[in-house]
Image (cartoon, rainbow, N blue to C red; front, side, top):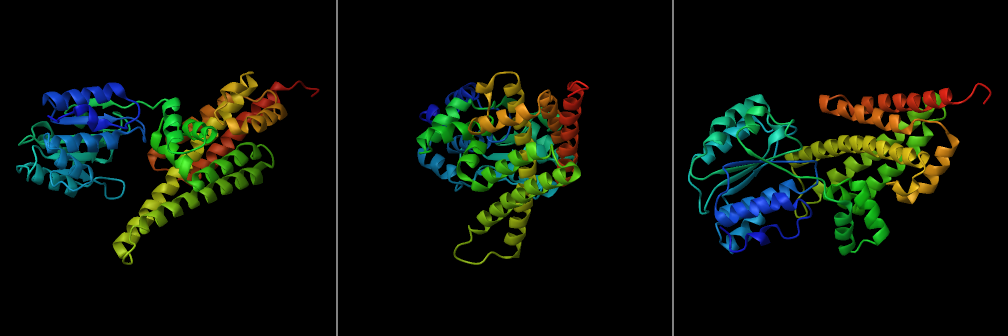
Length: 372
């Protein structure tokens, strides 16, 4: 379909198998009517969906594909959720537009976040998703298949996007001018997500969150309730900074005129979402820190992810001989699951810190002999 389908995905890191499948569909003109791209955030799903969609609507016209990539083609539409969900009203508008012929392109393509569709919105989409008219293609994006309603999953071709190897991400960051040690650290902290690694490389607020997590991770082991409270406060303060930075970045787009009320409200929503995401990331960082402590305790310090803090981690592990760091990391993994049930992030953080402290100190105290 395109003059050179392999160039459509130039610069995309990782997931060669998925890209080859899509390249073949473009080259042979055998694209499915609906795809579900799923995988953890930051591995390129939305970027690939936009580029694939641009190539589909262009039908081999290089100029049209370039316009579509820049968001200037009327037949490529990306539907952004209103808040946490894509509403039934938005879906009905998609269904209406999908019933008409393309304005100028070879196809009409819609990109939607499938895991933001509630039951009502998904039901409104099902018939069109199963039998779209006029060559319409739906590109659905989600974190996991489990997070999408089965009725939607069954009507789309699933394509999994895996975490990108840290070596590839580090090389990419180094090419952008980041010093090699910093590139390796950001790639490791990204945990397979190019987007998250970039944020660690570029956002001082996120690195500030990491510093607060490191201080809290070992600081909560002393001081009882006050220690836990200080640890939580430190993390939440840094999470607020992450949210405020996101809000400022959104408002900075309105350079020529002051943002209106709707724009300010959107900025606040984005800021709150970023703040909550930062609390979730803090739990991930705590788990990573305790996994590092576990590998140090096991005699394998070369496997530490927080390589720049390996010496400090070693000192703390020596101070708490016998602690079950791996169990503490698992406890945090369970706590992260609570975020999916709309529990307040502050409450989850407080409970997670309390349980983690008990896991470490409880195991530690049991491991010592009566005379120690």
